[in-house]
Length: 93
Image 1 (tube, helix red, strand yellow):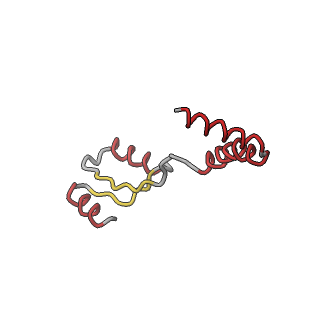
Image 2 (cartoon, rainbow, N blue to C red):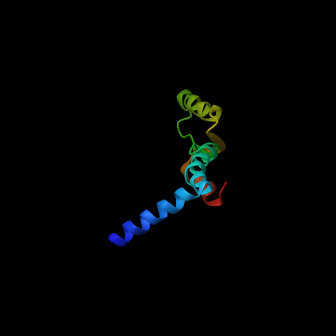
Image 3 (cartoon, rainbow, N blue to C red):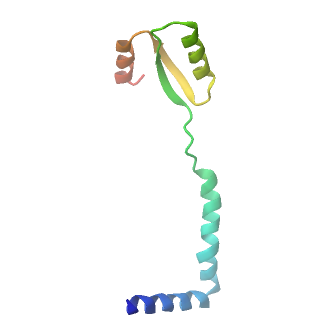
């Protein structure tokens, strides 16, 4: 444990002697935080959707129109039975 503390103390002394190293140690993570904060986004957009509408009611049509108006979903295809939906899923449509 003493050896680790000695090495840690030695490194802090070495870093404090070099002004450039102080800048790299404290300024660069700040710039990385700013730049990568704008680059990374966890928002899901343009999700391809296949709609299976077995109801064909006004409520289901209204729901489908809301999905199609959203920027988060792209309606690729629609059908009225599960079999057609599974076939399109296997094809990658």
